[in-house]
Image (cartoon, rainbow, N blue to C red; front, side):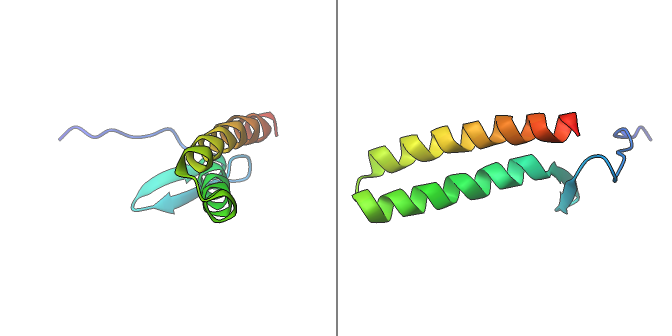
Length: 74
């Protein structure tokens, strides 16, 4: 049987959370959480989905790349 093995990760250097048997980096989960919070807050404040979705997407992308760079650097 052929298996695919992922490279071992140094638990002290990288932060991962196991979700359904798959290791998710913390920066992805942080970005998704920020995006969701921005989406909900703007929906409540403005009442328009267009503004909320576009701003949440921009915030998610920004947090994703900034936190990714932070985790890679440390």
